[in-house]
Image 1 (cartoon, rainbow, N blue to C red):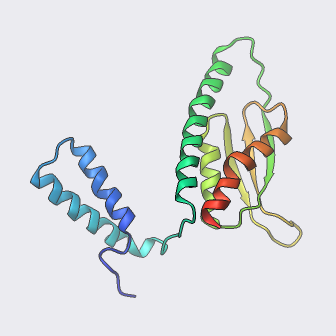
Image 2 (cartoon, rainbow, N blue to C red):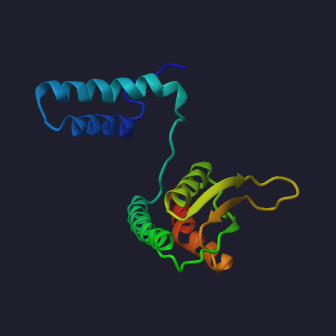
Length: 167
């Protein structure tokens, strides 16, 4: 299979932009290096990258990004309160979240979002197979008094938008 120089344009643009941000100044030399790295690194990594995924709802993706960033801030405060408050009695729990999303990248992104939000960690992605009707993510929550509410929140805040974006 023949490799193309601009096979991953978003990755090329992001690589060049990150290089410019890391340099802290824009000169002819840094622009030249940004172009070289932006084209060269994705070309070198090309055999290891999948062909890419087509997103169906860019606006929804940006909205989800805002929700996730907000949830990370709120969850950090909640975890800090649990850790610093001597009267707190966290109730850890393992919760199985059945999945409606079927796109593999959407499933992995959902697991990453759950893990990035302090207080929860996704540990296992169970694939659908005979004997198990639906795939699921196994989530460990630091403080969960209502597992059904946690499942509903994950499905509505993260999984539903991901389904719109990927499927």
